Length: 156
Ligand SMILES: *[C@@H]1O[C@H](CO)[C@@H](O)[C@H](O)[C@H]1NC(C)=O
Ligand SMILES: *[C@@H]1O[C@H](CO)[C@@H](O)[C@H](O)[C@H]1NC(C)=O
Ligand SMILES: *[C@@H]1O[C@H](CO)[C@@H](O)[C@H](O)[C@H]1NC(C)=O
Image (cartoon, rainbow, N blue to C red):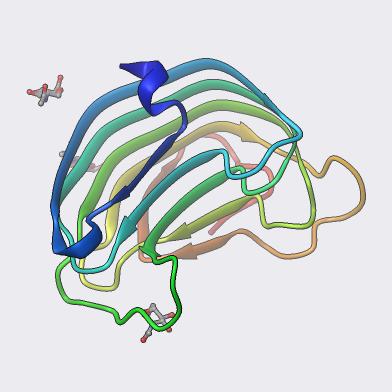
């Protein structure tokens, strides 16, 4: 079960489909020199929910796109936004440490306009640049929850 999902959940909701994913824990993982790590991606127009995900104790080294939620996933150009969307809630990121590659923003939360992501918990998420300086602040759109400890880089 865990190996099947690894750290990439998605893409869900393609072609207006329904998806329900709940209670998945990913823990004790090491990721290095890689792309798209702890990622959840859903299509606009899908329905259902993703809830109860826990990403716990993950070490990263020189990783692109460390922590991603993309609810606007689309592999072709010109996908429209829809009113229906898969809801995301109860997602926790705990003890995620290491370094990121500055070519991509390390933390990117793009939640749907119609349903916000809720109860997102960040605790001991510390991912400074592998080399060089931070290029942009983490992106956070329609995403709500708590930071139990200050995240590095800081997010609002
Ligand atoms: C997920 O976990 C919650 C809390 O432990 C539980 O109430 C719920 O029934 C679980 N859902 C599934 C689909 O197992
Ligand atoms: C969909 O919504 C997002 C967030 O509001 C916006 O950034 C994006 O431009 C919209 N896409 C289209 C195709 O309208
Ligand atoms: C989400 O968090 C709020 C406050 O932090 C809490 O009241 C609510 O019960 C949580 N929702 C679920 C489904 O646990």
